[in-house]
Image 1 (cartoon, rainbow, N blue to C red):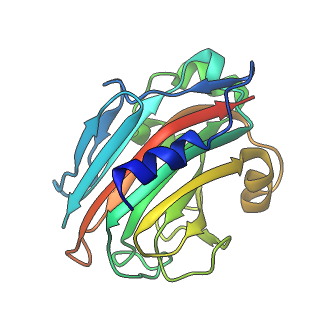
Image 2 (image 1 turned 90 degrees about the vertical axis):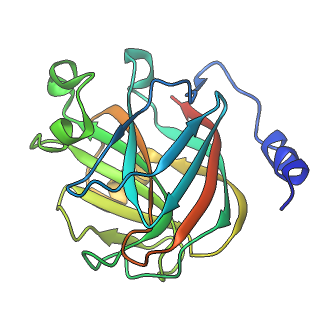
Length: 214
């Protein structure tokens, strides 16, 4: 898909209502490495985040402001120009994926204490739960998968492996209920990741117009 066609796709997103808020890629997102020192390249361009992952993996993390913590839905546009081969996302150490968007929740009475913390610190919290939307893997679209890394993580597959460009709109409340049971707590942070270290592949991708809606 050309840049012009992708711009037209973004323009098709619905206009913002009073309860919707754009989350910009404005330099406030910070990279969080995993155990190994493999690092992706992230380029924060305001309305768009460009990602290059070349045999690497890391996570870009943003704590949310108080006004954003009650979001019940989200939407974004994403594009994959080059991606990794299909993998089993339930297999630890072999679960590469093109892009993943994380929504991290905690119990409401713990939100203030954890606000502004790193992803690693928050995910050590017993009440923390992360709902992860993924483009990649060999699973059926809509599948909800247990994470091989933690019982506090669930993955929902939005797109299988492959290139292209798409708009996404997700119901955080309904997906959380399907993934974990019950209602979500307070949304305290977002993250974006690309993962190509296991397959030693390369990912060239972007996410834009990330919107939270109450």
